[in-house]
Image 1 (cartoon, rainbow, N blue to C red):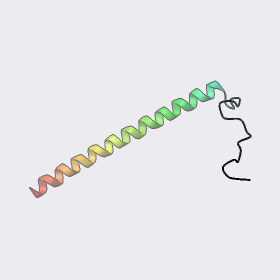
Image 2 (image 1 turned 90 degrees about the vertical axis):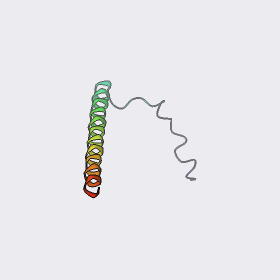
Image 3 (image 1 turned 135 degrees about the vertical axis):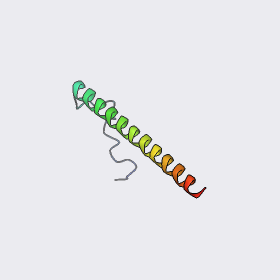
Image 4 (image 1 turned 45 degrees about the vertical axis):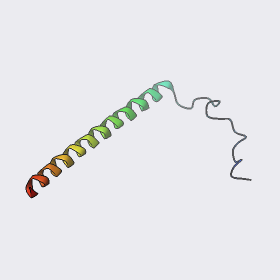
Length: 62
């Protein structure tokens, strides 16, 4: 069987019935949003630390 036509006889994801409940889906969405928020805060904190370090090094060599 060609890899290009593999599983084309199966229905698309939008045509299949939902496998998880709406309550569980909402819980997972909240969890994903919280994780994204935490990662965003972590990256902002990392950028601030890097900026402070760069300023400190720049002042040392000036």
